[in-house]
Amino acid sequence: MVDHEFQQVVLARAFPIHDIQLSKVGLDYFDAWLEEETDYARILAGDSVDL
Image (cartoon, rainbow, N blue to C red):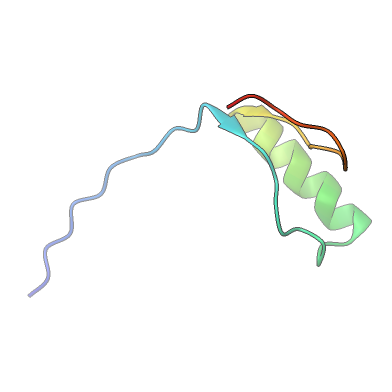
């Protein structure tokens, strides 16, 4: 028998990576979902963020 204990994880900030396989509709949906959950932003090519 396997006994698992789960704990909720709350993200402070999120930046998408590896999402090239998503269509424009998929990107919009994904962005909207994460914007509801946390401080979310896309990092454009050449931009940087302080972690």
